[in-house]
Image (cartoon, rainbow, N blue to C red; front, top):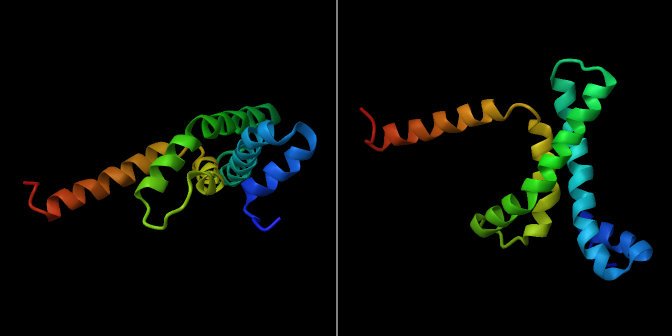
Length: 127
């Protein structure tokens, strides 16, 4: 194996258990779930303490969100980044970021809106 990116490794491992065609589907999403769960661990360290069932639900929610959003975000980023990366290469880092952000999406939105507002004002669009 020459390609050691996490998705390629996961596909190789799953090929032994489920065959190559199914491993091509399962491998990337295994990386997404694992990356999101690790990111969620970081988010949990930042936030308030939860009972074990609250922690489990939080991680399940974050992993579900990552499974649903990572492919689309990976495709968009691959199209706009100048590095020529494949979307599958970005899936792990994006899923990790989704997990690490956790429940702080509102703060991310406010931060982004502030930067957009600042840029508009700087270029003469504001009053």
